[in-house]
Length: 172
Image (cartoon, rainbow, N blue to C red; front, side, top):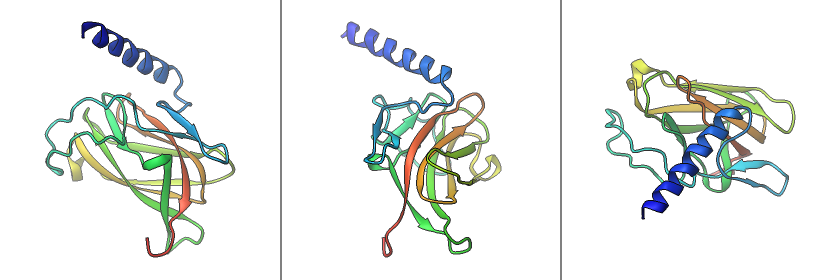
């Protein structure tokens, strides 16, 4: 048992070291979609347990969690993200994404399209709205479907994932 814990510790520390040294690269497991988008899969080891949250009571750590000891996000199954059509901006897509801050601070989100030109916007809840730690909601807006790299940042923590954004089917 002690051997497994030691190996697990080495794997986690090594993974965090590699992720910190490759900030432009997504951390976590990757799988390529049929068109070559290197989507990120949930972390093989769940992030640390969550502190009490005034907004969401005991959310637990879901199997689709991805992140580190400071911040985590729920990833869509298969690494894809079905996004809704923006009713104001033609061609744009949006989706709600849920984040959990373990360390205190304001969440900042950046996005970059990997397979072509594109613009990105994130509407993120504030510390005044959600408190310094715990759950915070966001609405991510993409100028087009495609392969996108998303980075959430709270302080020094900046988990990055890659997702394939597709338009949600009508009626979904």
